[in-house]
Image 1: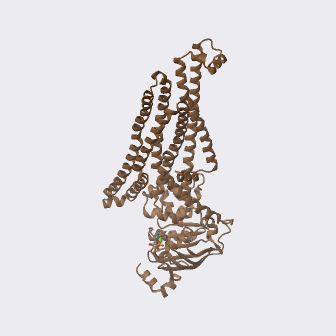
Image 2: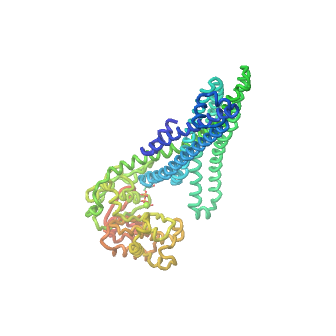
Length: 599
Ligand SMILES: Nc1ncnc2c1ncn2[C@@H]1O[C@H](COP(=O)(O)OP(=O)(O)OP(=O)(O)O)[C@@H](O)[C@H]1O
Ligand SMILES: [Mg+2]
């Protein structure tokens, strides 16, 4: 529990902790009012049945005079009205507190999901290489909801109920010490036993819920994400069965929790009524007259009526918190590990503006990189230098390390040894400016289910998108004709992952996206692999004709694409085995000759 509170406290900032403090104090007031509500009923009942008390008790005599009552009846009317006002006030006050509590939680829920998504978005690329996106989706949506609906709301309820319960117990102890003690002991023993039993049943169910809900999203993502392969291979049943298995385990965990929340209600019912009856039996055994214990019994009955829902809520909230607390562990873990990484990265940024950067050269000095959990380095001892305006290419066998090299150049992967210098400065000191210079076309292009326009100006709002820039990029990517032929032009929806476009058209949208910002450096990872020879040639010519002389870094399997590059680097087993112009390599390198021959 301590641990849980510590983690929850990390999730809130100072201002929020202050707000929680205020809510807590207000709740304390609410508990006081609740107790007053319970405590006032027995004397009122007593007064109604024995009006002669009005003249006997000092306080009532004083009140009678102050109110200027003319008869007992008028006085009782006054008292009834006052009681009504007190109850009204109490309930309005409690409604307001409830509103504030939920309002606070709602606002916090939005900001916590934002904070988690932001931590994921800003986390290093290597983090995403190791985590499944289904898990991240689950964390941002259902786990955050669990923290609120399963932990925080129950916790507030728990605190409120515990406060009310304690106040009522104090009231009872003052009014009837002995009987209360007996009832309290009976209650404590029963609740302790119940709690122990539930804890045993609940053990591990929270973790099962978490794991299985992640698995369910994963099955849906994989089955629907690869729907073409799923259908052609006839694997619908596989995904369906995998999903059913997880859904059943998830359902079973929910069933256990549902029972553990509901069944204790009946138990509590029995225990509380049992306590009241126990007091009656005890009093009768003591030889007390029933008449004399009636006011005391009415107090206990009212208290039991108020305590019953409290006790039920306390048990069910504890069960809920147990079930959902893994969500707190998980979100806390991700936040604390990712937020420390991103603050250490942002501390390293320098103030150099992006236009000053990259006037002369890019230099790679003895770069090593090994993927987390990999047994061999993907890059070992890569050194090369690229002058501004040059076009260079990496060629080599599949799996030799070309994409990795480009990811390091992009600053997505941090080399374990060596550095990348742009005009003599390490790119990691000003990564954002460096990345702004680059237009990057990845090996596999992600298209969002949106219009062509929004896919080209990826991640910009409608107001920010510059129409002429979109057309310039389209033109260079050889897409102008296609877009003009579509009925909705730039507003054409491409479908999920661009499903309504051909492979080559998708790739050209990716190219247009990279060119939209008119970048100085263009990095292409197999950017033209899906294009036919003519379209590719036209695209390369359009690139050369674009304003300013671009620096181009590319990977291509088709050697005709890179024939005109200033320099080709042959990548082999994570190293650069040779370099030179196309003609130089053809004349001196046997491996390159073989590659050229087989095309
Ligand atoms: N996330 C990863 N974790 C572990 N190993 C990886 C990861 N990504 C790539 N590798 C490994 O690193 C090596 C280099 O991969 P890379 O993607 O750079 O090859 P490539 O030259 O681009 O190949 P291709 O031409 O097929 O695209 C491969 O052996 C690959 O298995
Ligand atoms: Mg690759």
